Amino acid sequence: MPIMTSFGYFLSCEEFGPRELVAHARLAEEAGFDRLWISDHFHPWNDAQGQSSFVWSVIGALSEAVSLPVTTAVTCPTVRIHPAIIAQAAATAAVQLDGRFVLGVGSGEALNEHILGDPWPSVGVRLEMLEEAVELIRLLHRGEQMSFHGAHYEVQDARIYTLPPEPVPIYVSGFGPQATELAARIGDGFCTMEPDADLVRAYREAGGGKRPVQGGMKVCWAETEEAGIDTAHRMWANQGLPGQLAQTLPRPQDFEAASSLVPREAMAELIACGPDPERHAGAARAFVDAGFDEVYVQQVGGDHAEFFRMWAADVLPALR
Image (cartoon, rainbow, N blue to C red; front, side, top):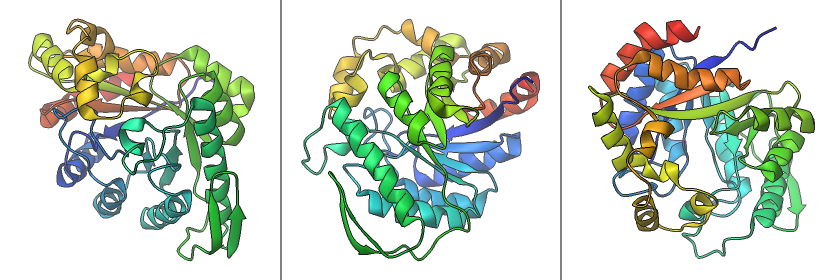
């Protein structure tokens, strides 16, 4: 049977303040989107994006504003915030959302995790920390008093009292083979940002099986394609950075400097820009064709009313 892909909206805490994020969530529900992704950052990628809402406060507001499921995309539970605190936050979010919450986790970026002066570990160590953090979160979600003595984390006589009836699902992010294998081994689902059929296949063959695969994409509705490319390049040129730069650069101004090397024309290949619904639908279909179960789309810049109008009238019906 073909995969029945659902379509969600991606709320960007880097680009919009908390009230705007809640307003966008309401618009997404009215437009017929099925679910929400929300980013978890301390810094934006660059100053042009200009925001950095605390995700757990926003999730509390979302629980009262909409009825859609919410996934963090993604939380780093290893350096900036201790996994025991993430366990408590996730449990509370699941109670607020009446079970419609997924904790998406990943190994993080130096951009957000360096702020307390901690060293930024190698990829292998970061993944080892992530695995231990997920283990600890799941133990705490049992609701029993416990102590934990791991290689990276210590917990003494801790118990989480506010818990949902069912354990919080934990999806793991991955962009390369090591993280994808880890996601298949320890996650209840998989998150990634490219419509890469080989990566989806690798996840499923490594043990992910039929567990959900989520993917995120950006578009930029604008009155013209050229205007959309200009906006996308000004605000999200970091999307075109190669290799490990997104994980290792520590400051927004470092991303701005590196992004100056990304040609404006490259954004037309990375992000569907302009008012053509088929261009937007084609970008989403790439994820569908690659085998994704859930696809989340983010509107870059403003013009959200026009974006949601077009997706509700033309794009979502075509995709479904």
